[in-house]
Image 1: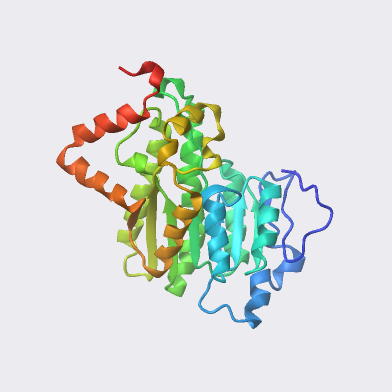
Image 2: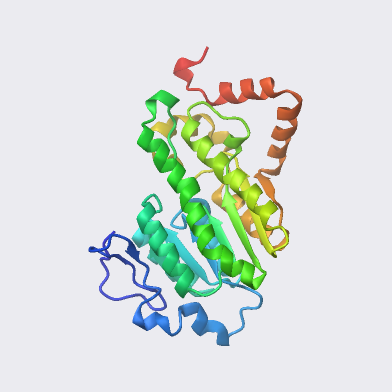
Length: 308
């Protein structure tokens, strides 16, 4: 991810890949930012109770919408995603409300992710909010999905989130304040057709969220997982997901709707929420008649050419 700009935009930190070591240089430990990062320099102006927020997958979709709402509330933000230009554009926009730093990072690169989050933990100061939105998916039957595709989905949805959480959780515990919000999926309730790798990865992050909430219940840190339905995001831009999007377009929800739910959790923490809220009925149907739910979900998610 080459940086094509010669000069850093005001208030932003340049990001580039270290050719000799491989991991990303987030710029957070550069000479210019070591003494005072943008949000640290802004402490002279009142930010109320707002704390630093880190959002992965923030170049588009749910992550972008969430970062925008957090900035509007006065939270300084660290924006993490692959798309360098989109991150810089968003950081400029969010700067109207609060300081924002873009970090160009492909979280599917485990080595780069661990290096970047280690630097973030060391140089950014306490993180108050972490929202893990980065995602990818494939809409194919199990034997048609390459094993490497399954590994990548598990890395993006689960292991990258684990790396991020491990980097910020000690500081949250020390401060006795913080909130980790992970984006799950309704597909974890009952696996749809063609979602084997995606549903398994989302189930992993859901179970992790529940376990962390149990283990750190008295730490002052909150943990939440948000289960959206079908969201109208670039997630569906891949050719294998286009048929599913067309078939379920009437049920599409906006990224902004999910982001509003995410941000509401900061004020009213809950362990699990569904978007839309009436999707909570899925758990009731599953408890009372799991075979019916499985049949309905299979019928809706299976491609038309192989139905019947």
